Amino acid sequence: MTELTVRLIEPHEYDTWDEFVETSPQGTLFHTSVWKSVIDASYVPSRLLLISCFDKHNLAGGCVALERERLGTLTAVTPLVTPYAGFILEPPAGEKISDQVSRETEVITALIGWMSGHFHYLNLVNPPHLDDMRPLIQAGCKLVPRFTYYLNLRLHADEIWQRFDGSVRRQIKKAELEHFDITDNFDPMLAYDIFAGTFRRHGGECPVSREMFLQITTSEHLRDMRDIICAHIDNKLASYIVLLKFQQTLYYALASTDGEYLHTGVNSLLIWEIVKMYAGREWNVLDFVGANVPSISRFKEGFNPRLQMHFQTEHYSGTFLKIGKTIRDFLVK
Image 1 (cartoon, rainbow, N blue to C red):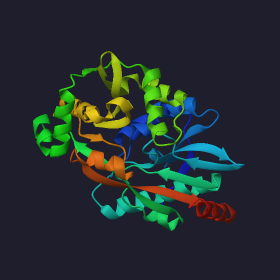
Image 2 (image 1 turned 90 degrees about the horizontal axis):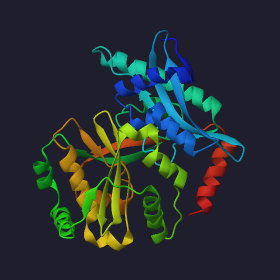
Image 3 (image 1 turned 90 degrees about the vertical axis):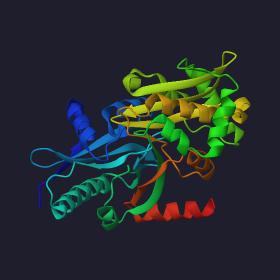
């Protein structure tokens, strides 16, 4: 058995950590120190932890989680507007599958052991391509399947267009008749009001703070990893999509449409504009970051993406905490 050490990554090690994330099959933008800067600024005094697992020489794996105290209980959870947190592993080395499985099992077991010793409750949405969940099951974790959609950007834009459902193509053509101005002219304060208005229309409050929204859409931390595409009509912001970029993946991070223009098909038009901008270049996929809400999933399905499964991990370190959670869930049904 390999000797492994689990500890928090120190600031002077961020470059090493980010290089590891870039090579990990599970690594995403949301595992990087850049995203940590965004979350830490949005969740003061809570912080995003970069938890490492080292062998004698190198990083072998890690886990990302938001450390938060709730009712005197220390928890590790996935932050808002963060589609993936949780566990990442080194790339496979060698050709023996048994050696790879053994290595990954040791690393995940070490990480979940450290975390369950430090936190009373874990709730982490793991990234795609973390395929072998047996070490988490053996550690007593509850696993819940989750889904996202991948749109293949390696194809030419014309081929992607032909794969869209007819209803999506009709919405795009309908929006084109409105003569929207498609630019990157983005007003973040107005954009947040439109975003929050989406929740109000459905009778709820926006869970994303203005501070967090501004961190994602305007902060220097993400400047080189962010593109924003907007649709205006009569100089009024009608719709926008915030893309975050990492490696060869585009993440559909934030999007909203003014209620006045929902009937125009403008959101479908913006997705088509993204396809025309990025398809057939160095990008592999547009990750729609979610296929779990039925109404939103139906909209995304029209672009004929590929369904990708990943897993949410939940773990309780205390019996009383688990009982309390069970009672609370029962009462709110």
